[in-house]
Length: 346
Image 1 (cartoon, helix red, strand yellow):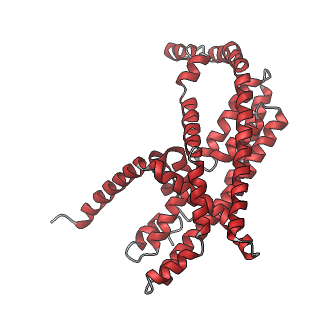
Image 2: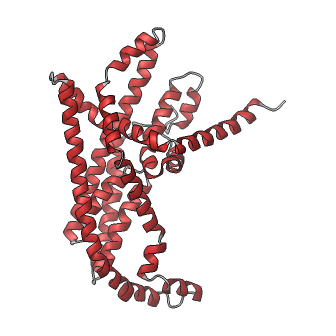
């Protein structure tokens, strides 16, 4: 007979792939709901604080709507004005790239093989914009971001229902499952507590990271400093990859903007130092091990959810994986899998 484990593992892999494909197909429906589910974790403490002061639920929800609307309006204004400034600056960047940076690279690599030199000569600005994977990633990410924002009304509706129904779910569980209500509510509270703490903490951490980036770029006089700070705030929600991507665009603009090479080099070194200190020293100390996920598992979940839901999936990969881990740990039959998913093995 074939060992049961040798059958279980392939079946589990197949089930994960099939589930991922199904989630990918259901993205237009599921993604707005999942985004709303996690955004509600950010505003839930505010609603609870207002309710504790006897503010009616309807008024509390209106306050949340006003805050979300003001936040999105501010982001939209910054994005629109910055994109207009970027479009106006592109001809200047093109001239500097074609007339200064590209010839300098050709002189620097004059002793390189002929194939390398030929590929380098083909990197005119127009070809670079059309074929660069970096620009493709930017456009794909922006497209995914605005695609979800196009469902803003649906997301806000989900948020209202989720926040409006908080506190009622425990009572429903106790009525529906009287024998196991305590265990189920304990699991739900753990998931809510960890995801709420994660999203609030990571939002504040990324906000400071974006502000530091904008301040550094403003000090050096780099174009569109506020836009790069906003992009840094948004992309650093993506584990590991986000902080790297946050450095690329402002550094590239610095090299395209300034004629003196010392300023872009200083910008590069300063941004790397800020990102390293904030991302590798301060942030781990603040975040701690609240989610307790294996680093390898975080990387795998980043790839998987990125495949399923694109950039938004990468943003949501860590909290979704954490919810799965907590649920597995709470069931005796699947607790070993939850332990394997953890970083500490506890």
